[in-house]
Image 1 (cartoon, rainbow, N blue to C red):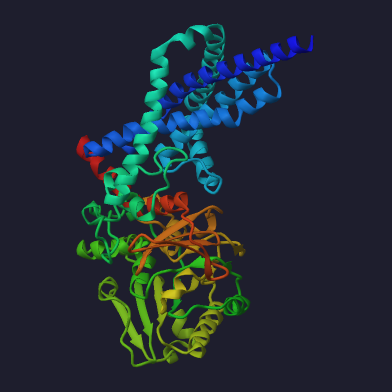
Image 2 (cartoon, rainbow, N blue to C red; image 1 turned 90 degrees about the vertical axis):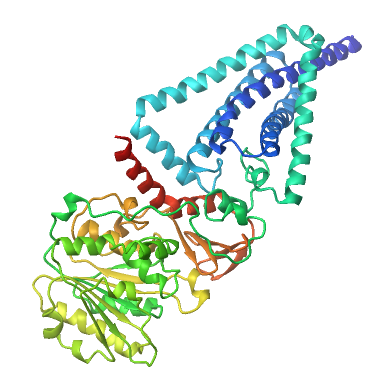
Length: 565
């Protein structure tokens, strides 16, 4: 009796395991078909070897991944509880969920350039929400239809494999297919080892194409996104990061914005070439009749020359040389000119060092002056007599005493005005390279805005954007002219990117990643100001690269649309 029961158990278990293998085989075919979306996102490579690698890694990796999924999920359950209906049901559910996730991962990779991951869940959820809000019925319908179709497929192949198991075991060509998939898996790894040794970019750029595949290096990824030159991929040393596909012309002010007038108050931007402390910001806020919003996680990671470009153009530093070649005028200054609003730039420099304000910027201001001390501006009558417009004061190599005295005089003068002005107090540029990962607390006093502490990530690139939005109420989409955002509506999961002297910097909350000119990857803590990891956070890097390329890609599309019409 016992022997019969053991024999029955063993036969049922072996039958289920054999069924599981063929059930997995059909799921391998489904996974390979779904994975075509990754190949479509990647695009066809150029060389024969890279094309062979794409085909073999696509077939071999997806077959391996699907089989491993069976081994880690369905197989242990089969050993523990070998009940036919239960195993077939639970296997269908497991693979329905996993193939649906694979489909979602393909959609994410196609849209964002990286796979599903917890660290970038905010961006992925935003993408899904955007698709849902833009095409609610079609997106929901497609998603539901895909899930149901996969579930029906699983139930059908589960039933077919169970009923036709003996027939399947006798078909030699199916076994040959399995052998071919195994051969593809081995061949893809051999090709990758060869390509790694020969530094074959066309093969290596496919790293990270499929889920859980070879991790891409930062150098490969930046070359793929057009920030490193493909021709210089092997021998790259210290040539600067550039946009290898050229830069789109800087846009002109939108006609609807050109008709706008500013609100009837001035904007004072007070800049210091030294970082401000939280104590200074708190003191300034106490002195002000109207309390301002403190920007706690404010950053400025450029040197003193590039920082001016970031401030006025709201663009990453690598666009600076091209914008100078185009003789482009920042959108904010275009807006001021369209409304005949005065703009002045004043330098306070009590040292013997030459001004660090670049010539291209001085040429954009009809009125620019230089003083050794603040004596002309310590009286309220002088400050309040300035024409209503934009007034930028920059303190270079000036003592804290002069700087703080000026700010206090400006805040005191505001108490005598019936219509009070916007005052933005922040630092500009970094004298030392180590300062690029530090926060620079800032203060914005805006009479129309409720004072609060803004803990989200903000930057000097946001200044011009916020002024255009609230001072002029110009509603041109931010992305068309820069990477800045409205500081009063910053998302908590914001990613900020800029190019710095030694490479590319991407910031998200407390984490900074720096990729140097050779593609080396390091992560820093903003708060601790120290190295925390050398692990590559590719999703964060891809988001940063997308931010760098956003202006260029969007304006190329806008310029192409009229040509098509």
